[in-house]
Image (cartoon, one colour):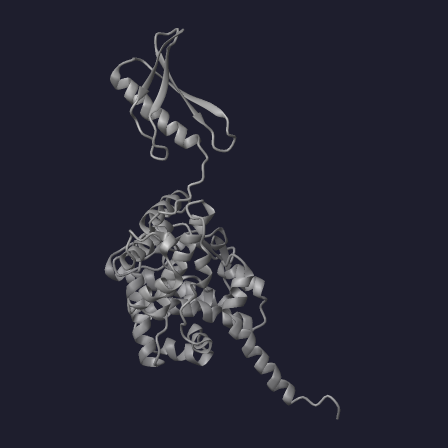
Length: 391
């Protein structure tokens, strides 16, 4: 093996603009080893990278130089902080990372939200020039509801923190001043979160279709997310063990079936007696409808063609029925809240409810259903007023 040459090749690194100084050596096998030396940022020591190619021509030298540039950039651990990075560039890097760690369904949701951000804000804005007042005024000018603006705000905060944690940004002190927009009052939110037993009864009597009434009863008695319920197959209803196996969910925006977002969402939900009756009623209804319409399906609940029930169709039916019977809009998630509220009011522990709902931790349950505990306190106080401890 002997050194043939030391040459300078005009190939530029994306991070370090400099000409490559490359050594070329012929190996015993007749191939050629191309070597480049660089300074390691973390250690301050000189290191080398090399690649072996079959020929030593102008084309292979250029190819070798390109390969060595990439190898150095991959090994080099210099921080990526860039005072000139734009919002568009930061979002692009964020999405590239999210695509590697998220499931396809979750990534699509993240992608569309990031795309919405770049429709509101100019992608060429330098992040170092961003201020809290600029963020707030730009969002307010969209005229969108505060709930929507908070979704955009929360994602932007997550992107800025990710950029800081991964050395794309050196300073994100402005984020602490980028506050949430005021939404409805807490009292109004609490009233919208669940149904009282008498309201639930009125709602159920308001359905004109037996199918939608059964689905509403099922959601209220099981506490399942609407996506989990619509993805169920008949075999997931395990009457012998008295459980519903939750292993998948449907993402209506993308019309796709996938595993639930979190590990805690994969669970077995106990079938209590009144829920068992509804499950059997649904199965009988679907079987009878299938015979009448000429379809066979493996689904627990299906549409008139034996396929998945449309999330949007049910949401619209629920909205119209609730507006007519209760005078306010009810969503499938309100039924889930109602389920948890009824369990809590009947003495079930927060941890047990959390496991049934598939929450990642019981703190989520405590926070969301705080109104139930407040209601119980009021009931206890009313009871205390009527008690005479000393005659």
